[in-house]
Image (cartoon, rainbow, N blue to C red; front, side):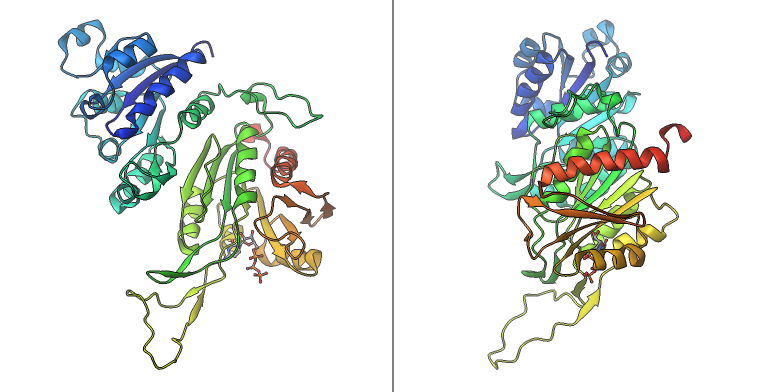
Length: 420
Ligand code: CTP
């Protein structure tokens, strides 16, 4: 695509300064960038800086008559190939979800017929607030790509998800949305990849679960396991590199979102199950998460206290839903469904039993007595009805890439790309 055009809407918030770097990166890659500053955005960056960097006029107010004569807001919203909102504040997301058009930015967003990508930035509580969760779900349902914010320390001193993704990550998401992504770094000895549309998983949608789940006992305690999420995140990164649209449903892990991946964070098995269901249909689902088998039957509303008698509180458990098994039985079962199994003994035997018990197509099994959770390498065995394919010990990202090659081959048989 020659010189794709980006309409960049810059919301208010301390992260607005990162939009300057984003404009610089986009211009460097040959994008034509037109900036729109909200009133709140103007408090943090100046139209002059953006005009100088974008080498284009900056729009600030719907009711600027001169702008309307030069280019109407409908035209402005449609001449771009992609509309990007960064930072997308809680307020902007709420207005977008509700279809409110009360200024230049929101009017353009309502009038556009082009894809929209939003990079949120807000305080962690605002991001986790049920109202924002609803708005993000609505927008995603409407086809807007809402990136997951980064996790970390915020300008307000709190810690958690809500930081604007780094400009490089936003640019990578833009590249991918416009099929303009640079070729991934090839593995040693492998031929370089051609453009995105020639990549083995281009046009495929892949769902991945990763990390542990946390099952609350009371407001300060939870049941969990040692899963680091590294293998699942490496698989998500490899799937995106291979050209797939990737939905990563992640348990609580402090890992950065791989470029181009849509990430939904969850805490409990039941939340993971709901997000997985909402993410279907997909071409392939890869369940890498170490889902907690049990949760506390009752979650105490207050912190459980010692009563001084030495008596321990009873901890009744309830079984969690088996997400993999439910997806296998779902009317929306993906053409290729893959489970993982971390075992400590009789790895292949347990994996074979799991394959039929869960109703999936492959089980990727490894021996956690030699590969403790959280390590950097894995020696995996791909167990299917066709037999067992045992791979050498490899770094987790190499396991992920090899798995993508196998998945791409398998999908050409199970779900030929031009059959739909
Ligand atoms: N899995 C799942 N939902 C669960 C438990 C497991 O989706 N509630 C998935 C995992 O993501 C993994 C596969 O099932 O892909 C196997 O997980 P594992 O914990 O090994 O299976 P279990 O059924 O819990 O078996 P075990 O008795 O060995 O714990």
